[in-house]
Image (tube, rainbow, N blue to C red):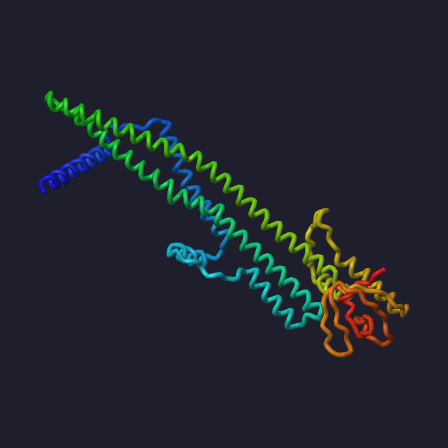
Length: 364
């Protein structure tokens, strides 16, 4: 019991000594041992690393998930160590709406088929976005968070301990200056040597930890490269999906493309930008394809000849007068007097029926 009381008294005395030393330093009434310039620079660099890591993390999280409510929900699940529920992203939602609309208008119609294809592409982009977010969270955000919650907390702990050792050292220096009696002076000198040794040892520990920030920078650089690579892959996937979609929509022949272009060009000051495609990804010009295809079908109707045609998309016959089609098959087509200009007579072996020209590409 007496030992515990003495220990508590000693701890209280040490705490009081530190408090007095700290207060007198603030008031300019006591000298303060300054850290060497190298250690001060390391401390400044570590603090800057911590602040910029927090900012980069925050802005990356905003980029990956712009909705603050969803970010908060994901944070709560993370703290509870539970998996957040899988939710559809904006591309998924748009894609599903486009597909539902296409099915409602009918996959057999040009507009319905185009809506479905656009919806499927949006869902592909949604999947690529999820892969990008997942990769970025593991390879970029997690290492940054580990530094803040691990290495930097250790640095902060040792830095605070260094501050305590410095206060003890300066308090010991003050007591030595005030000591007058030989015994008191000898005790003060012994205390000073001990506190100086403890301060030097703690300064060395802190220095080694702070110099490790260089390794942290090197690791974060590798993480940054991983993030850029994931972002590059994501944008490349999105670009390729949209190029493929543009080519599919551009292959719609006849009045579908022409009418669509006419309605757009008729608006005041409205222009439709086209996606630039590199030489490695050749683009199909919708207007050129439509004009060429329309001219070919017009020639077929005027000459009443028979031609071979490739089927562009699957088509389900609406009634017994029509012929169901499968994508990429080749059929024989001909014009029948009095038939609607958007239709031709198609033949496949013994099967015969009307087929929409928007689903066909004439072969030479």
